[in-house]
Image 1 (cartoon, rainbow, N blue to C red):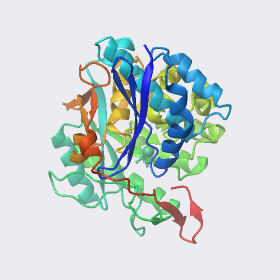
Image 2 (image 1 turned 45 degrees about the vertical axis):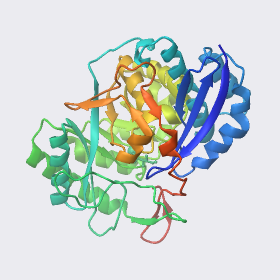
Image 3 (image 1 turned 90 degrees about the vertical axis):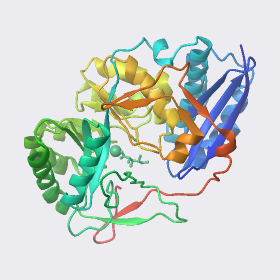
Image 4 (image 1 turned 30 degrees about the vertical axis):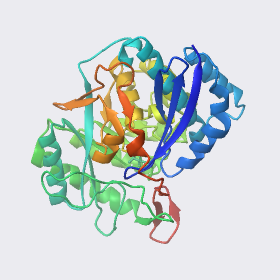
Length: 408
Ligand SMILES: O=C(O)[C@@H](O)[C@H](O)[C@H](O)CO
Ligand SMILES: [Mg+2]
């Protein structure tokens, strides 16, 4: 009935992951993800120096009390590092509780509300032809929903665009580059705003009205620019326009919302319910983009989703490859259980990553399912993990044509 050990594990099978492993005195093991892309060692230090000593000897069953102890007890509240560390503890304790109950975690969260979680994949191409190849590739894999990103004429490598690929090839866009300094990219919002509607017109013409399409603006527009893009994309019936503005300025979304009916999703860099307060109560968004890993865990994100449900706002949890298989499993269990599930982002992890983290979740006919193993359904292979040393990596920095640093 107590926590015996808590270990902070770092591995790098192609990219860096931080995992917290809690073991009880009965030998039950729980895993939690604390990966913050490009700033991984900050959560390692926060956990090792300031959280692990607080866990030893505590009752593993009191998840809510532990969450409040770590959140209120720190005095310095919120922030991505603190909330990722709390998330790792929270998820590991839910994993343990479900294993003790011998149930898949979603059963403890209320049971299954659906047969599976509708997933969207990432198609991209430097031009329309390579984008179409990538979309066909995703359709072949069974995706029913696809995010579309392309290059912009006149700009070089930009957010969201993988190298061109042939049918059957793996999509491998990874923004965090393993370089000693961040890569720098060039950006021009006017060129982007002119180009994107032509891309969606071409995609609709080629693939028809049925396919679910999404797009990520990656925080680059002002509210006025975002309103303009939302309007110009209305004929193409997007499932959502993501991160159209930086989003910390919640009031700024009023301008976007009042001008366009294109659905809006925001929140992958948010870390508590307070980041959403105005957005939710004024119904300025349609989808909550938080990941379990970056928002204080299952306990906290569940509360955000219950709050959002009152306003007909649904989930669209952040699921790129920098969310580890542990974090992805946690949000699949949550997504199975909540009523206001919307869609789940799904970028398949590399083969090496899925050998380090052995998962029970499946992807069939466009739907993800967390599997029915007790707990999260993820096992950690220490021996293999230890062969992959931590390698520093940075997300890119974005500059305007005149050299000014812009939102990336
Ligand atoms: O915007 C997204 O959906 C992601 O690709 C993020 O850029 C990445 O997860 C940052 O670590
Ligand atoms: Mg995004």
